[in-house]
Each structure stands twice: as C-alpha cells, then as structure tokens.
Image (tube, rainbow, N blue to C red; front, side, top):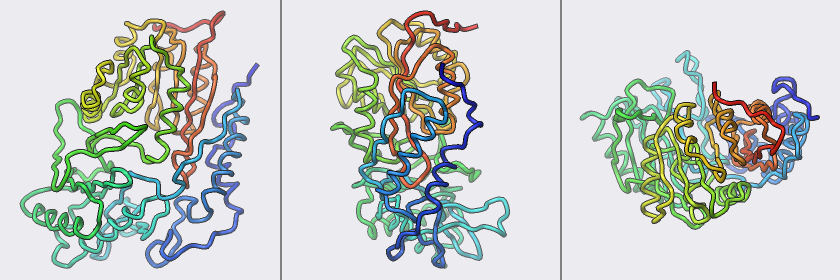
Length: 431
C-alpha cells in the first residue's frame, strides 16, 4: 500500500534544488550578464551560476528524489529538456520604480517603504531574449530624459510578449490622458525605430497602480486598452498551427518547449476518434485545437473573456468546427452543468493556474466517472495534495511526465495522467 505523506512533512522541491546547486562554483560571466546596477550580481535565478546542461541534470535528479520522497508511483519519467535553456522567455515584465528623481525598470523591489526601494535592474537577463533586454534599456534611457520626468511617473509596468521574431510592448499606465498621450506616441516612435522586431505597442490603464501587471476584465467590465502602433494581435506557432491571441490573454512563457508539450499531452490522453474532450482552463485553445482532428468534439472552458474570444476566433480561422468554447469560472456549478452531458468517451484536461483547482473540482470529475484525466501542475508544492485528492476519489497515476518549462528557476511543469480504477472503488457523489 502506498504511503500517504503530508505535503509539509518532506523538504520542498525548491529547498532540495537549492541545496544541490549552492555548493557549485560560480561560472564565468560574460560582459553584462546577470549584472544589476552598480555591477552587483543578480541572483534571482540559477542562470547566473551554472550553464543549462548542468542545471538540467541536477534538476532531473532532484525531481526524481522529490517524487520518491513523496511516496508517489509509478516512477516519474525523465525531465523533458527545454530546447532553449536560456533566452527562452517570450513573456517578461519590469516594474517602474521612482527613486531620487530617476525611473528604474526593475525585476524586483521593496514597495512597502518607498525609502527602501531597491529594484534589480539587469542589462542582460540570461533567461530572457536579448531583444527584451534591448527594449528595457531603450525605454529606461528614454523615460529618464529631463523633459519627460513628469509624465514618466504614470508608468506602472512595462510588459513584453510575443514570440522569438515579433514582439509587442505593453505599457501599463496610471492614466492615458491628453498630457500622457503625446509622451506615449513619442516613446513608441523612438522605441520602434531603435529596436528591430517590435510589431505592436499597446497601452493598458490601471488607475490604482495595482500589483497586477496585466489586469483581467469581468463580463461587463471594460479595461481601458488601446493599440498605439502596429498589429492588433500577437501570435505563436505551435505544432504547425498559428495561434492568434490578445495582449490581455495569458500565454505561456517558454514557446520553445510548447510543441513537444502539446504532443505529449495528447499522447498521454490516448485520444480516439470517438472521444469527447473537456479542456478546462483552456486559454486560447492550444490543446483542444491542436487535437481536433483526432477527436469527435471538444469543449473548452476559461474564465478570461479575452482568451475565450481568442479561442473562438482561432477555431474559426483554422476551420475547426468541432471545438466549442465557453466563458465561465471553473467551479462546481458550471462544471456540473457541462458534465451532465458526459458519456463514457469523455476525457479531461486540467491546466489550472498556480493556485491549483478549487475545492470540489477533482471530486466532481471523479463522481462523473471520467475514465482518464490529464492534470497539469505548474506549482510543484501543490502536487502531493492534488494527487492525494485524485487517489481518494479512486484514481491512480498511469504516467507522469515533467517538463523544464522554466529553466533557471525551481519551477517544473508536470503532466500527470490519471486513470479511474475499474472495480471496487467508491467514488464520492455530489452532496
């Protein structure tokens, strides 16, 4: 019998990985790499210390040890390496900090006490494409011009999204009025003339200057959002298909690994022509649209109105009629309504955010006797608790495939295939 181990009774994956990396010698850095202002070393990720091939080997062995320590079986499969071990992030951001009359676009800082603000400004971040570094350097130099100081203080965040060829710059501002608009127009022209590959510039307004760099809108809420320059949508090419999406939609940070990630998800689900797929937290539809030809039908569910709109437009543009998309929170009420039409050939993908699935979601899927589910976990600290829920509902892990989605960090994305035990198992029902 497998032991049930509390998630807090064993060292975290982050701790185990840090302990394995810390004794290693510091690698020799090239000019500008991982250096903060004043030449201080940026230690926010391990890219400053070791090369990717060494990091990958260590992460793979530590992951196996973590999995074993949690009493999970079968054994986790080898970690899938990222094709780009460095310079892979296609979504990056900087927070604007104001100190001593200077604007600094920093990776991190202490916001609670303005007198102690200490943003880390890095000229060349090794997990970001070089173009991103060029954009942030160009912007920081421009907005610190004396004549622009007053309007520059409206900047909250700068976000760069897109792919490895085309980039969109999104300015999160506290206001976009008649005083700020000319400044943004000049900034856009300067930026696009200086840095090649910028396809779009957008403005999103967050008057409260909240801690969220990309606000999400509700059904009837309109977020002030405007294109200043270029194309209105971003794109990513995955598995031969071109997916378009809004700058406000969530998109994965490591485009280089998405092709093999999507193929493996489909393989783990063992999709058949008679299968119906329920794609929960579907985003702009990459899993269901990529698998459409192998399925009878698919339904995607997503909270973000922008992402659902993107998924619908992608289905129409790609001429895929058997994929439908619904906007809604993934809670018990909405999920029960969808699963009420379930038949024996339904399979489920769950790709929740870092805080995991809400209480009752796993249990409701199990109560409908879904034969196979694919749960993608990006927060490894939640893994033991999430797997325990499936086991309590009569499901076993058939395969677990980890992906190095975030090189340089202690994060790992794990695709876990769960199958329902066929006999002698009590499955809880709602209520």
